[in-house]
Length: 198
Image (cartoon, rainbow, N blue to C red; front, side, top):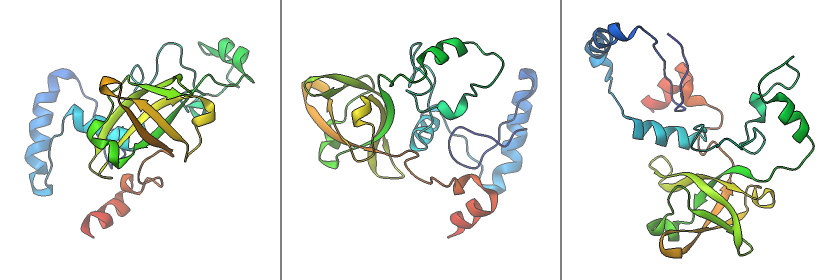
């Protein structure tokens, strides 16, 4: 049992042998009925993680993405004796990143024409990056997303143009992530319970 999660909400992960999980699932749901326990699916998980700005490796990154470009430099300790990729990162140290992963809010006027994942960010008439994740946030009642952009556009407040379906250009603003609850209060037992009862 680990008090961790990927969705920015109070949660726990239970790791158990596969053969035991059907009985464990049934027992948890039986005992959790009084507390209102509910199952949720992968799409809900994907939206919740996006609202917190959490990266999905392989979706928001690829084999060429560096930790700096993905805003994950906090997760790499360069002073370790050795890790795979360390020499490559040392060779790149001091070089400016090609692009940066940023959060964005789509302009409300363009929500009806929201782009999809892999649609292009256009900068000065050229391809400047791409959308990696996008969804309508029920928490914020806005379309939010993650995209790679040129470093010049990575500052919160920067304006983006994204080529949507049929070549239509839509606009967005770069914002800090997480999109909500930057203090992580919803992940804390006492504060989460107090917030839910308010």
